Image (cartoon, rainbow, N blue to C red; front, top):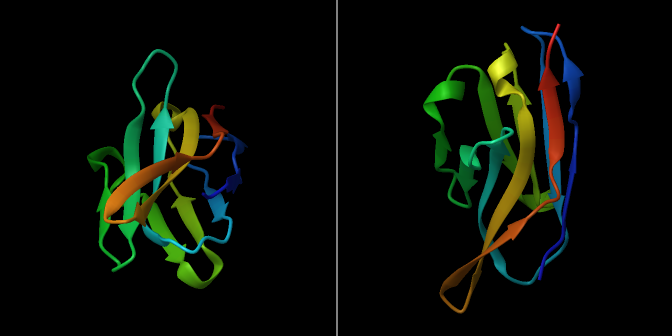
Length: 119
């Protein structure tokens, strides 16, 4: 029902910044929530930040004050501005959207973009 295209990952030194983008294809359904998750090697995928269609935002405790999620609903795009990056932020970052179809939420995932924080 929707395709996601992520961009913006890469290699950055500790203390540096990156901005991730995720563009969702056009859909006739309501994109209720747009979010970023990350998954480090050997660990489970975890929520980093999310933003709903009503503007409600959540952050993982580990990124509060350093990361900022934003959403351009007109472009079906979600961004993640990551500042003061730490080596422990190294992971594959996945874009996630929840589509509300007939009162049921459906999850869609991007293919992921690698973020590596290293000196």
